[in-house]
Image (cartoon, rainbow, N blue to C red; front, side, top):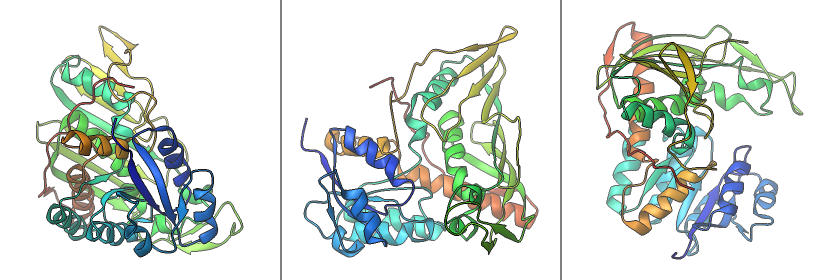
Length: 359
């Protein structure tokens, strides 16, 4: 095995702990530097890892001991940080979404091509055994020809648990851009790219109240749609029905199901790497054995795959092209909802390669 990919992490917020756990246990990655707007958070994240604390993003991306930048900032600055890293000749792997606009996503991909560096994007949950076992069942024809799918993400809102939830309700946030990448990335893995969408959206509450932490009880304005529903037409003809909501207190809806001419498939939560996959055929639901995907995966597995792909000179799996298509699908769905009509999705992508069982 060659030298590990040296990683500089920008953003040490709530999600960073999961990445730090993964980076620490994978031989192909080594954390060398951390920066955050809060120096104390950066110091805490760096402790125990042997990493240095960098004073700024500019300082971190300029370091000689950083090969790749792990971008865990809020969505509004994803593109700014990614472009700074690319300009410094670094690979980038970032949290979803890739950007908040089509122009940002296109600029990132164009800059990376010019610089000759890789860009990867969450979610990498779809590389785990849950989604990949379901994908193998589809590819093996266990449900016949896919006809339809459903994808439901319902919650009353992240302000109940997040101490600083405002960014979820500002441009670049909302249930679709926040949680949609998990579900749409899974649907593209299962059924291929999306060619057409129609939808509706609503904002039932103009304000939200922080439910935890030192600012509990404070209210803030909602600037985005908080309930979005749509129908997606995939290139292969299957139709997916989607609900993404911060306005549903409880539901018995499945996370994802795929229905075909010969059976149905229950797919686990795409916000996780594992979970049971169930096949309905012959009159009953039966669990399928784990048959594909990275075992024991965690957030950062996509970055580890990018590191391996660089060493092996192959495409990486959690690609910016997939992330760009998913972003375009989401923005087109919002456009369709606001305009009250169906719209074609202008972008496309290759269906990502399947992940054999490994780890």
